[in-house]
Each structure stands twice: as C-alpha cells, then as structure tokens.
Amino acid sequence: MKKVMIFGYGFIAKNIITYLKDEYEIHLVSRKDYDIDGITCHPYEALTEEKKSLILAINPDVIISTIVEYGRFGQSQKYVEFVNYQLNKEIFELCQKIKNCRFVWFDTFFSKAINHEYLSAYRKSKSKFLDYLTKYNSCDDVSILCLYHVYGPGDSKGKFFHELLHTLIKYKEFKLNTDGYQKRDFIYIGDVVSALDLVIQEKEKTCAKIYEVGTGNLNTIRDAAQILRNEVESALGIKTVLDFSNRSLSDELDTLKADNLELRKIGWSPKMKLEEGMRNYVRHVAKKA
Image (cartoon, rainbow, N blue to C red; front, side, top):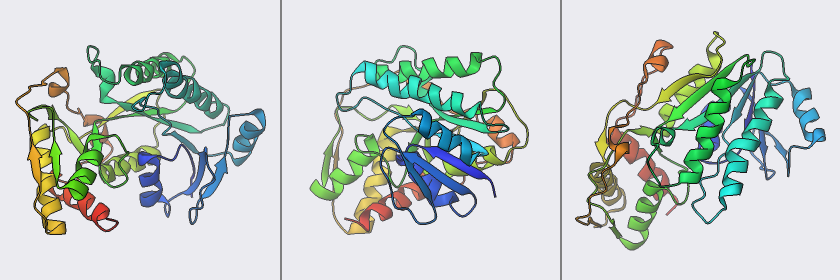
C-alpha cells in the first residue's frame, strides 16, 4: 500500500480522504490536529527542521500539496504569495529529498486568464509556482493537475456554488449581478479525485507533466445555477427564486475548457453529468440543513 502524504485540509483534501482512504496509507499534514478515522494527522505551525525530519522519516511515496490561499477575505497579497508560492516551494523541495517520491500539485485554469483581474494575487502566485516547477532542472517526478471549475460536497465558503446553494436553502432567493451567460467547464469533485488516483498510480515518471482536469465541455453559469435551484426545490420541497441581472460579464474565461487528452491516455474520463453532480451536491448539503 502506497504512503500518500497530503498537505492542507480544505475542499480538495477532504474529498481525497473520503474517496481514497481505503486505497492508500494516508498521512495528513495540516495546521490543526484532526481526528479522522484511519488517517494519521501531523499538525504543524511551520515547516520547522524538526517537522521536516519527521516527514522524511515517514518516507512517503507521494506528496500531494492542496495548500492554497485565494485572498477572498482580505488577506494581503504578500500572504497569498507566501502560501501559494513560498510554502508550496518548501514542500516541493522537501519531496525532492525523498527517493522515488512523486510530487503532485493542483494548478488552476485561472493561470491562463492573463488579463483577468478577479483574484489576481491568487492567479499570479499560482502562475509563479507553476513557472518554477516547469523550469526546475532536476525534478524527478512531478505531476500537475490543472483544475477547471470544481464543485461538489465540501465546497469552500466564498465560492459561487457554495454561496448559491446555502443562500437558496436559507432565504429561498439569490440575486446575481450578471446575466449568467458566462461559460465554464464544470467538473465534479469525485471526477477530480478519480483523476488524481490514476496520476498517483501512473508508473511513468515525468518532470512537471500537466494534466488538465475538466470535462472538456462548456456550460453557462445560468444553466448550472438553474439546475442547482431545481435540485434544491426537489430535495427540500420548496420554491426558490433566481434573480439574474441584465449585466453581461463575458470575458476570456468563457473559452477556457479542459484539454483532458493526457488524462484520457491513462484511462480517465469524467463520469458525472452536471445534473447528477448537482443532485449529489444538493442532497449532501440538504441532509445537514
């Protein structure tokens, strides 16, 4: 059984553990000490030499960094860059000291949106680390999963579908400051984890190979929001209102969809249709409402 070490415990990491905890010996390195059945947790305040020595002694086969800072809640640009670039760089350098250890990092499709101002500190710092990885001359085994618009159970506070879903459940109405005709490649979190599973198992070693994780199809935000609303009404037996404005916010992101050929080469394909994914997401949240 492979030893997999996950840094960070947010949306992506929680789902990795949910789906794969029976497949691998998972070690979680996080800011807090979580009590998760079958998982060894290693809390840390900083990557001290003592903590690094502990990680080296565990000798993981794979290190996965899910550590990320979006800067949605007023965090400084300096802090966003520290998390997304410097801290990930330290984790990568630690992985390089472990023989035959694969480093897996999650990039974002936002890195391609060079003229997009939304979450610019997040985008720029992620791009900076991607540039570092792709230009690192002596990396042995690095895989990069470029995520498109991920949704599903455990989605983070502040993200669009999280806010839409919880607002509809609580207030039965949601107002958008857009007409909703922007297009996105929506990918269910379960399909993201299945892609990661294949990347972990892939025998070929590559230096900074990029796997684009998305369906390869575009849907409008308007259509996705209406599907989610319909699922809320069906699951909870309530009537809700989606109030779209006439404001058009179409931009360069509208044309960005995943080229998932590299994943398909290793046997992956997305399984979850948008309607089914939204149904699973709503039912998961509705159970706790």
